[in-house]
Length: 142
Image (tube, rainbow, N blue to C red):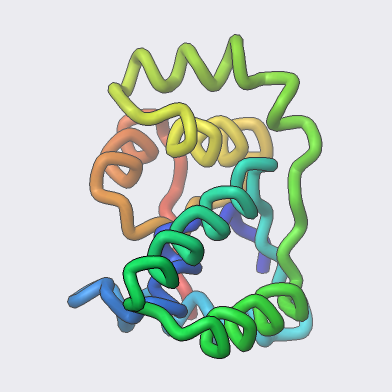
């Protein structure tokens, strides 16, 4: 099972702050444990995670030991970084950000899903709406 993984889902595994979306995030995590699972992320994904982790640790909302355990599980998961994202940042991704009024970070997930034809796993409401409008399927864990 292949899909594009948005940082909103991965960060909810760490912060457990997704409310009603927490069950969805947990189901996505379970899928990643399967033998045929592969998640794809844009090149900005690691920076997004690092930013949230660093800020949460600075505010004493997240113990560094928990961050390290999370990072170990992420590094062991079948998550592949798309190296072509950067080449599209100032063209396709920027156009998607403009068209759907998304941040460039969010638009990079949409661009990757459109280009790859893969469904998108996200908890971000704006990104979900943009994906649906653009014809991208939303990932449904089984």
